[in-house]
Figure 1 (cartoon, rainbow, N blue to C red):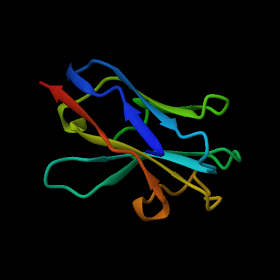
Figure 2: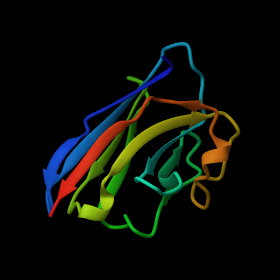
Figure 3: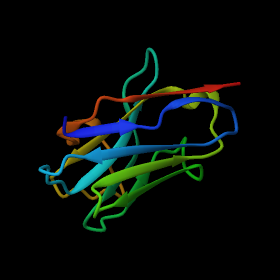
Length: 125
């Protein structure tokens, strides 16, 4: 397993969760992102970030509530999710890529080559 996502769970609306994504030591990557897929919907980009400082992307629905961060020494990425809403309920995936993407403007699922297994986030109303 090259990426391992964790931290999902059940939380009430308005609550917070922090997801973690551990990257395997042998995997070289430039950008890392969080994506989610709700039942019956396509997978969408939530937040993406570059190790080269090419900016950070946030989806419109999570701006101001979610924050992506990285600990490059630990090869771990995080997604801090605050003010959670029932519509945030989904399986969250982390993914890594090595294309040198301008992550301030793009966070597409087809641009990431390595994926974790997903962690379920359920927000109750």
